[in-house]
Length: 193
Image (cartoon, rainbow, N blue to C red; front, side, top):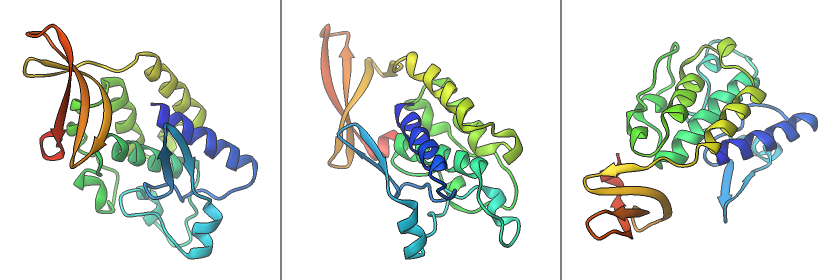
């Protein structure tokens, strides 16, 4: 939720500066030391870089010269957040759809609150005129972030929070009831998805 809020704040600042929509994807969002930044959209236009497949809103393929707008940015934000949570896009998002669809976000059940999953489904499956706006999405993300992280059960372990990534896996702080203490657990990516 914090990642989405940070991206929305940057996009809103760019809007004031007259920046163009449509350049939001995993290669334009940078996360370092819990700080979020976006690469300059002007650079992407200058270099001729288009967003990666899966980050384009479906309506962008409906006609030549169709300019991206805030609704397209909300779709892309949803895709970026799915990528941040899973480390990849679900296959249903990679192929550009001919029409609206409901993406398979079932892998998110391991790592996201139900409210977050509903928000992402809305951003990724609603028609452009029903996605809402940046302010409403920011409010939803603020409400989700106030709920904190959920506890995920994995057999006897209760996964509390992610504490690191690397070496083909994700490390979580977890509660081990049999030992009555916190432990660190590393899950390989294949097990997460």
